[in-house]
Length: 297
Length: 173
Image 1: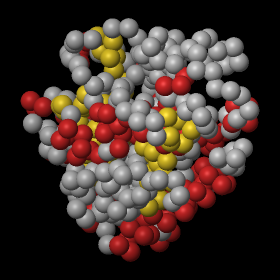
Image 2: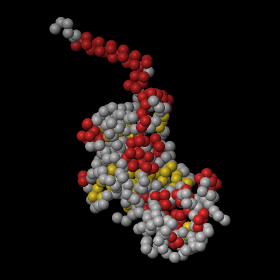
Image 3: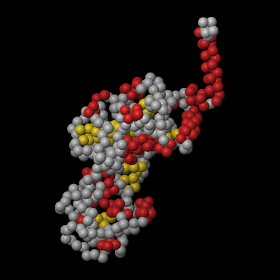
Image 4: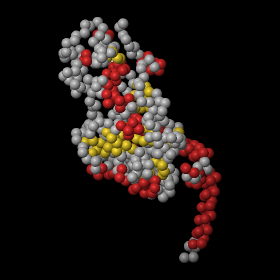
């Protein structure tokens, strides 16, 4: 009994130990910077630059290829919107796999940001959707397909429930996650009515030859175990003016993308000229993802 | 006289760059310019068609083709439609519009648009068909014939890519 450390001594010793490790952590730069940095939105431009540089070195070392990690901000007067033509989609999953190639999700414990739902014609009950379909050829008789990914809601329930504000809506309407700030509580996943968010239950594994080294801090940079991730409208591409990877992969041209604030954009043409609807409109999440029919029903 | 078109890809690219090939009057977004994929037939070993056809008397008789057996009109207005509705009898390197104007293969969309006006309108606006490039900058259009076989235009079924893993399959990894 006597040789047991007293409660008081234990506390004193741990305080000293913690203090020492903080000091040494700060002095060696790496541990301290990662552990004690401020959240992304509150960083000064210089701090962002330092973090990006550190991440580039870290990822380049890990994957053996030169990484670029950017933090390109939103453009003025841009609000991204997406259109998906249900009368064209054939459910071929080219988009799903182009997204995987572009956005560095884990391959071993499989994470995919797009789910192609197969639906019976005449039914719009998502409970009856099937996403494991695997026929020889698509489209299949009597079915249609609804690809679902993050709907980039204007009123995102996932953002509201995050207890640490690790996820937020950017000025151009993209809902992003700061993976370094996420505590992995998965409340956002419970709040999302579209099942758009995915959780890294295990350390993500991506083969070196499949990694995409062109990344954005809030988008496709490699993630870690215990954080949530989701579609970002390919923020690393769209912030540079390019189309998302899924748009370019679609063999039937069912996927449309553009600036909702530009009256001449493709997405505005879709909204003004075709029948459009949004998933689960009754929930008042105001998705910026418009499903439409370019051909008669 | 023998050939109206030079099929050299570099020449075609140059044509686009200097704007000799008419650029579409499309609904342009904020200051974007576009390029158009060249027609696939231009890279066919049989092109230019005039290599053979220039020395042949046009046979206006509707018949089964013995030399081009692979060309079958399917699901595209048969049996009324046949070759010379769209191919110009006088110059096989050109297509023929309803008003007897001729257009080259890179402008085949003008031919398709005669019947498919609503699709043409959507295509010009960037809705029908595939776009690649920049959402706010230069984008690439593809011709109708890049995705649709003009003789049998229905989009062909594809083999889908792999389905997602089921939870139990993931656990096994």
